[in-house]
Length: 330
Image (spheres, rainbow, N blue to C red):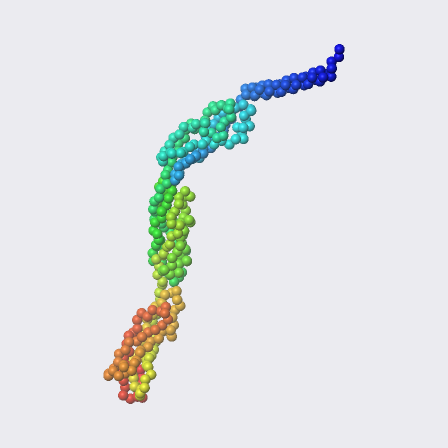
């Protein structure tokens, strides 16, 4: 008797299920066989892990933190691509570590990322590494500045720059501070000085110092010891009477000398005075005229406000009353 259609379709279905299961099983067995065969074919690889410090205590500096650890491993071809593309770090935890020198054994378990399972480490170098933890501290050092260029020709530099404040507070790792005994604030141009009262502003940010060191204050002020150059000259000028106007008959007078020498000085930041800039006058009042006998009155020099009167010779004018009004001579 011939099989029914239902029996035929069931047989076909069972055939495909059985064949598909066998196909999947074959793939799995082939993959396992490939892993087994490839695992037997190992290759030596050299890796480099860069030191990376974690949880470093605040206000500390670590010396020798650029260590590289060379690692040799044996790995099969299945892991080769992973080893070639990964970048490895050796992470060292510094939590709660004290300042001072330290020697730590290298632990391959600290590699990041971790090596694939089945990779065998055959050697690594170094097996330990030494580093030093330096704490931060603050100390004071004197500050200096270099004067460059030429001062204006009317100035004479008489001493070094006086800087305020005189010291700087520097903060940084102790090993960096050991070599810093003074702080240079760079250069100051003498051409910027305009007089003895000129104050130059200096910045600590221009100081050539380690980037791990901070400086306070940020701004310093410098005053350069200097004086204004002076010149002097002697003029011979006429002496003039300054007489008030009063009622009554004029009184004939005679006075000597008619001229006087006047020595003046000025700083070179001003123009030189001329003879006509200097006036020599004698103040004569009505009370002076009422005084019997000859008069001896001071000569009063005047000039521009930047001119200093050093000396007048003679310093006084002798005035006498004359009997004849037509004789009025100096």
